[in-house]
Image (cartoon, rainbow, N blue to C red; front, side):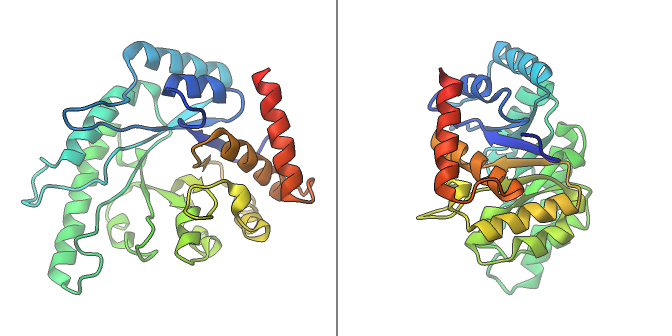
Length: 280
């Protein structure tokens, strides 16, 4: 099934390492979101050089790209200097993955310190520091347009707008976060799409990042219709973290786009069958 956008999935669909997930997803999606972590004085899952080379070969063979999710919410140190751990980790991740020519580096901006404060001076200072952090990381990534700032749950939908007006970064629109906070993602997308390189899609049940099949069919269809109407050609990542959620999410997107499956249950069954065929 082909779509105008690049359908993507995370690097944690099957319970295995990143390269195994990339091999599993090759041919099924057009982008893989590499979810990377690095623990201070502890483990990390940064790919080795030979793994990066294999991922490059798989991408070339299957017309596949990568998005890279930076591991920490980006911020400067409290004194305004670029010594914060989030910047150190961002640079290591970028240095490790730059050879993959990523479609985008997805990132969060840490605004918790000013989120619920009425102190205008603190908010202005935070915005200045956010712009400086993006400028710095953008240089490492090959240009600010490679950075895609994601909207977060619990934040007003326009919280990052004053920062985005000052630097030519891209955007990641997380539809699941908007649903979680009760906002209309279609209205949000109408303004955000011209700068959007990545969209995250996931359903809400006991928490977010569940199968897209958990989203109401009419709400999912409204989002996808907006993407088609706007001729969105970026990445649409099914941001879920199990094989079942991935397969049922694929089926839900197909059903909402084409209306060829009258019920979510039928879509789930078909996805499961497809998954069995892929594994056989």
